[in-house]
Length: 236
Image 1: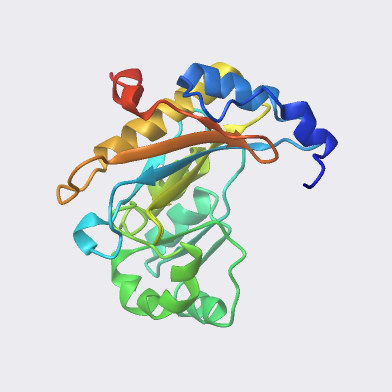
Image 2: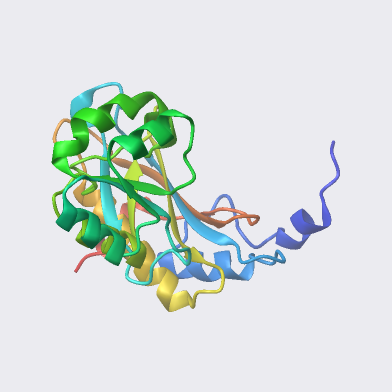
């Protein structure tokens, strides 16, 4: 039997795998267990009762975190109209371009966190599916990243708007802040994410939608949330 590391031993008794935690308890526990020398990310992981192989059960969207993620997103914008270029640059986009930017990405450059595209650029941006798709970077109308208001989109992303998408195993992973956030800030971000995921339930999904939800820091143990009570915990 492998020996437990000092870190693993320190976490013993902190997160009981047999217990279901409230949002408040999980946020506090995740902060307490974030003892690494860097500012650990706090993340929510969901297991959903959907079959992502069917288009009508795909869960994808975006959520604006009240307190951001603790990280300034790097945003690129595909647009060609002069007013859109000016708006994107004024909002702080790292790269703005049209055919030139498409060619740069086709060459393998993906040093950014989010891509925004004007609708009239999607014929070109569509060619980048093999590069951007696997990385979850493809602009999407549902996520609000295909829009004529590119400047506003960049501004929202910089303030903490993030995308989420279910993977092939019906999981969703969403960062909800940093260990340096206050517990109240984490809780408010978590509530907004859970509320948004619940609202994103596809009409084709039958049976249990939220099967499991866990909160953890980068190097810490997972705190399993009480999914049965989540709708009431995040109710307006």
